[in-house]
Image (tube, rainbow, N blue to C red):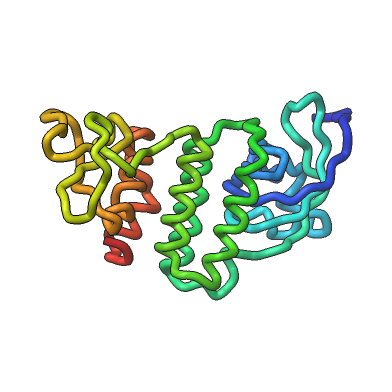
Length: 228
């Protein structure tokens, strides 16, 4: 890292994850308005003036860093803007915050530069202070899926185009990412009955279906019977 040069940038960031490397350096996974990046805070465990304890998961920061040809960023300074994890969030809201961060970490590749990601995550984390956590997560999942290119369809049967009606039997089919009426439902496809209420179950399960595994944060929410 000696002799590291590059343009100096001041930005905002949400800490997705951090860990110590080489005894005193901190490797930080950050989501910024410019995209998702890994950064290194040299002597971060020792430097209280430049970093202190702010490089913790969920914290919203103002950062100053150097970026050399879009390679690993070098953090020069970080100050706390919103200490999500240390604020008096309830258990459900805190676990929900970790769940949102987990989704970003699992689905969004490093150096992804979609400018819509940062406001979606930072606004959702802020809403956990004032809104029902399960509703915040539902809205995040819906917007996150659209942003990630998964155009789920709930308006009509994917086969015969019959419009959805709440008094008729429709099913969400995970492979197709849309709903089917009972007459057109594929016999071997993974599916769930579809209603407006069932979206709370369908969206996270579809995300896990695409990921190929369950997210631990979501499991904890379910196991603690915080969510159904």
